[in-house]
Image (cartoon, rainbow, N blue to C red; front, top):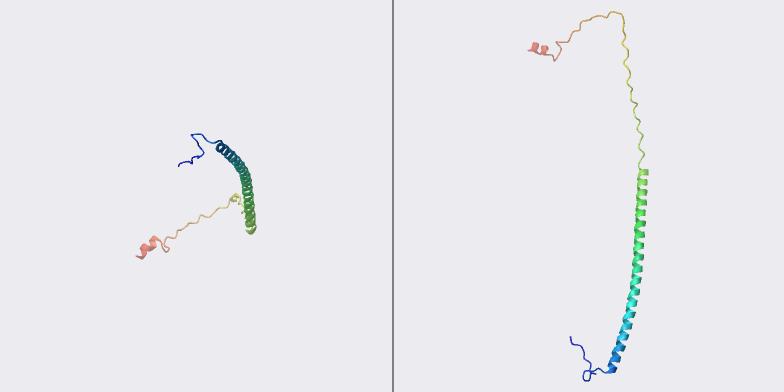
Length: 133
């Protein structure tokens, strides 16, 4: 892109009035740039301050939310425990102590030696089945 050429040149020299005008414009531009920079710095400072405050508030809110959640959880657990009936106490049966066997009575009386017969011809016995066939 071509730049505009100054028409005040005469044989390669620039007029003094044009140089003074350029200097004044540059000075004005520098002042505006300085003001703009100061305003940007001030905005940035305010933005950083607002960011830090928001960050601190968010941290505080998370902490409060965590505490509130724990309190709610404890409250619900307490309500659940209160709603449940208390478990009935189980009575443990007394453990029977091993009692010694009663002593055998020893007598000097004679005992009868009776013959013992086994039932051999009852129902369902082998002899009864073979006899029936």
